[in-house]
Image (cartoon, rainbow, N blue to C red):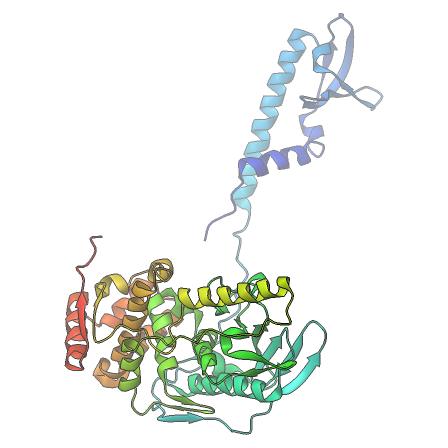
Length: 462
C-alpha cells in the first residue's frame, strides 16, 4: 500500500493556503528602502508577483507595496526570502507526508456469492408454471411498466397482456434454467421476489432505443452499465394489430435469449469473449417451448445452430394509400433501418457455416479481445459467424466431452474468473496441462467424427 504523495500542483495550492498561517514564523523585521531613498521599518509577511510585498508595520497594520518601488538590494532580499520560504514549506510538506498515516482504501462491498453448485446434476428438463402472471404496475403517456416474478418490463408502447405473457415466459424460463444448471450462475440464485427485479426496456422506435444506450446495428442488446436488456419491439417480433401490438409467429423474440443470458451471467466471464458469447449461444440452442427447455440431447441442436443458415424475415408489405408523403418516407426509412439491422447481425436460428469451414487457430480465437472477436461482424457476417460458431462448439465440447465428460475443467475456469483470476490464469486452468496445439487436435478430431470438418489456420505470430 503506498503512502500519500504530494503532487507539484497540490504543493502549490497548499503553499498559498498556508502563507498566513506561517507568516509569523517567516516574518523578519528590517529596514526597507524604496527607489526614492525613503526608509521604513517593517516585517515581511508575503510576496506575490501581482500584488507586490506584504509588510507589517510597527502599528501592526499590514500593507502591500509594489515590488518595483523597492530598492534593488531589497528586491534581491525579497527574492532570496521567497526562495528560502518555499524550500522550507516544501520540506515541511514532505515531512508531513512522511508522517501521514497510510491511506486505507474503503473496503469494496463483498461480491455476492453462493456455494458453487457445480456438483449438482445437469437438468434434462427445466420448466416453469404455464400460469405465469404479468402484473401491470403503471401506465402513463410516456411509459408502460409491467412485472413478472423476477423481471420489470418498461415499454414505450402499451402492450397486450397475451404478448407480455409470452415475453415474460421466455425470460422467466431462461432465468429458471440458469438457476438450475450447475454452472454457478449467481444472479438468479440470489434473487428473491422482494429483491429488485431485473430490468428489460422495450422501445417502439429505433431512435428511442439508440438514445437510451442501445447498440447501433443491433435490435437488442445487454447494457452492462444499466444492467438491463434493451430491445426494439420490431426486433422481438412485435407487429401492429389495429391500435395495439402483438407478437407474430416468426419466433423472432427467441433472439432475446442471448441478451437474457448475458444479464444473468457473471460479468467476470466477459473477460473471455469466446466464453461470454459461446455460453449464451449454447443456451440459446437449447430446444425451447413456452415455459420449457429440454437439454437431454444438446449435440444435435448445437450442430444445427452452427451449420444451418439464418432465416430472413420476409419484407413487410404495407398499404400506403392513406399515408401522407412524409409518412410514406418514414415507413420506407423504418424498413431500410430494419434490413440494415438484420444485415449487420442476424444469426437466428443458425450461423450458416455448413459442415466444412475455416477457423482461426484456437489459441488465437480464445485470446481475442471483444473488439477482435466481433471485428468482422459488419462484413457480410461471415467471419463473425465463424467466431460465434466455433465458440458455441467450444462450450459444448468443454461441457460434455472434456473434463471426464463432466465439464470439470470448464467449471474450474468459470470459478477461477469469478474469484478474480486473469484471463491467462483462467485459460491455464481450462487447458489442464495441455498445450493449445493439443487442445486443437482433440477438438478438431472430435467434431470431424461428428461430421464437422473444421480447417484451422496457422497461429498468428505473437
